[in-house]
Amino acid sequence: MDETSIKEKFHRLIDSISDTRLLEGLYEAIVQLEVSQNKKDILDELTKKQLQHLEESLQQSYSGKVVPDYMVREKAEQWLSR
Image 1 (cartoon, rainbow, N blue to C red):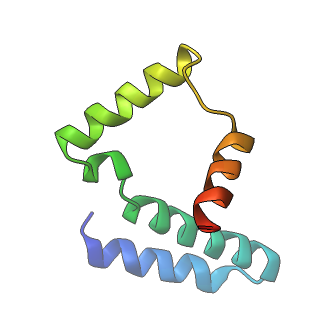
Image 2: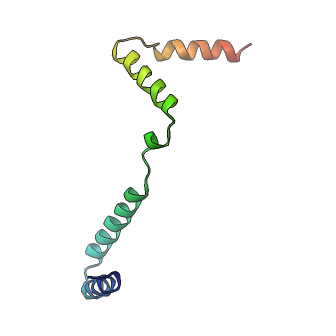
Image 3: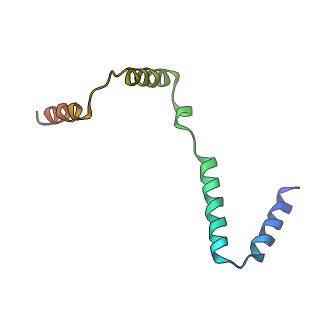
């Protein structure tokens, strides 16, 4: 089936539906599908070096080598108050 015939059948199907809630649901589903297909995975945008740093950071966090949030906030306040 070619694109034109699919669209024609789809239009006929939509025209035959009189339930507004069903039409709204179908519309939202199609919009969400199109949005999800157009989204890019941010990891695909990173360079090899950035991916390596990210992996290293993840490994550090898994092994407990992290700085608590409150300490980061304290350091940031000290730095900003200079």
